[in-house]
Amino acid sequence: MAQADTDTGRTPRPGPGPRREPGSGPGPGRRRRPRLPGRPVHRLTALAVLVAALLAFPSAVPNTAGHLGSLLETFLPWLGLAVPLLLGLALLRRSAVAALALLLPAAAWLGQVGGLLVPAGADGPGSEGSGGGRTEIVAVQHNVGDDNPDPAGTARALAAARADLIALEELTPSALPAFTAALATDYPHHATHGTVGLWSKYPLTDVRPVDIRPAGLGPDWNRALRASATTPRGPVAVYVAHLPSLRLGPSGLGSGRRDASAVLLGAVLAAEPADRVVLLGDLNSTVDDRGLDPVRASRLNAPESGFAFSWPASFPLARIDQVLARSGTVTAIRTLPATRSDHLPVRAVIRFG
Image (cartoon, rainbow, N blue to C red):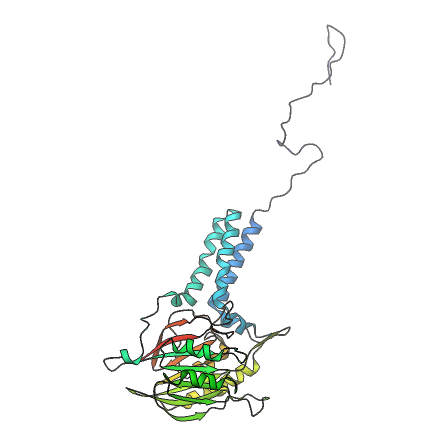
């Protein structure tokens, strides 16, 4: 209660009080917003752990719904792009915890695909450079495209790679003469069946078709052959195959026919008596895709280094054109310059001890 001024007899008015600096408090009628500092950091950390789990254990993702497991395995290397993205978000949040959590997906990515970053072995000239009882074969694999407007130019480009074997898919009756004529000088031995063909510097014997036709396709669907190439150091069984294409639709990845064809091809390879085997082809699958497990089960080795993404040619995302070998090592795999196909050619060196 205010006291009266004894000199004037007036009651003094209360002063204005201490002045409030702008922003120094909530002010009358205003509330502070509650701060939630942990939520964004927790989300980033959880995302880092999820990405690490997908990279480390892609086979844990089931194929029951839209073949999501195969889809993940096909494009698995690209999942590593999540690491720099999450790192940028962690830096924006200034969160050391989230940044440290990114070591998990980074390590998982290196564990899965880091070996492909190792420089490939010498890009050898082929069997001419073999020595000490070792056979070295250079192979080129290419889906030439059934609508290729320049088959002769494509053939000349492939011949310039100086391979010992050239495997082609999507050969059409109209394009076959152009390939045969352009390759005849350097590759005097060749065999074709349906839409696949093999051109070789070595004599080819025991040439026969291979039935990998899944149910539901007509008798004119012929996309695999087998031949024995007589190299200077003994025969090598060579397979050329083109598995059915995948279909991406509202229900997910349609790979039923591809998977069924892979089972048939795997059974043939498992029964192959030859010790040295080479498989060349457009398998419409990466070697990490579980759909190719029946083929890999026949002890075929994949390239040890190099990504060599071959499809699509305009912006390669995956290597679905494969060079695999039994009792041999696939080295120095790389793509060749683009032709008029929607695939890039793949060149690899195969070494048999």
